[in-house]
Image (spheres, rainbow, N blue to C red):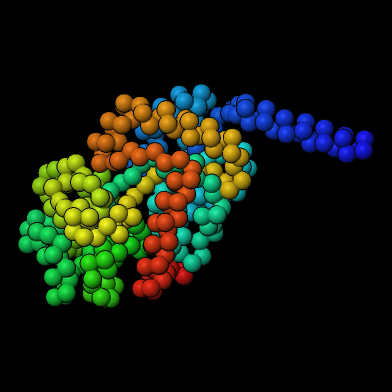
Length: 325
C-alpha cells in the first residue's frame, strides 16, 4: 500500500513538473525554419508575420531559411527536432500537400508533424496572355481539345504542375497529361513570364504571383479557384463555373512542430497566432499580395491539409503522376 501511494505521489509530482515547465514556455528564443529560399512566398509570409508574432510570443524568433529538395530539407530538420516547441516550421502547400502526394521517396509523412495553425490562404488563378484569343475557361478547354496547348509551372512536382492538371481534369479533359504539354520553369516568376512571352498558353498559380501582371493588363485571369471572388481579379470563381471541387486547390502557409508537440504548447501557439494575425500592418501587407488571412485552429488545420493531400494523391495515382526519384 505504501509503495502504491509513493508511486502515485511521484507520478503526480512529475505531472506538476511537466505542467510547470510548459507554463514557463518559452524560456528562450524559438527557432523558426523556413523551408524555402529568400524572397519566395513562404519566406515573405514568414517574415511579414515575424514582428507581430514575436511580440505575442514575448521571446525572439530566430528565422532561418533551410532550403533544398522542394521544402523537404527544412521539413526534415523540424521532423527530427525535439518536440518541445523550440524548433517550429513554416509549412507550405508544396512541402506538406504536394510533396507527399507526388513524391514516392519523401522522407516524411503528414503524421510526422503537428500543425498548430494554417493562417494564410493563397487563391489559385488561371491566366493567359491577352493576345491569346482565350477569354474564358470554355475557350481554353476548347483549345486544349484541339491540341497544341501548353502550360507552364515552377517545376515538375510543384503546386503549379498539379494545379494545371487538376483544372483540366475537373473540366472534363480526358488524359490531360497527353492533351496539354507541360513546360516546367525555374520558379513561379519564370512560369508567369513564359505565358507573358507566349512560350506557354496558360498557367494556374497563386494569385499573388500574377497580381502585378494582372493589374498591368499583361495577363488575363480566366478563373480563380476560391468560392468567393478575389480582389483585383476580374474572373469567375470555380463555384460560378460549377466546379466547387477546385476550392481545395489553393496555396497556404501554416506552422507545425514535430509530431509529439504537447497540447499546452500547441494551445499557446493558437493564442499567439490569434493576436499576430490581427495586426493591422501584417493584414495590410498580406492582403496587398492577394493573400486571404484565415486562421485555423489545430483541428481545422489538420483536417484542411489532409483533405487537400487526399484530393491531390487521388489525382496523382489515377493519372500516374507519382515521382519515384
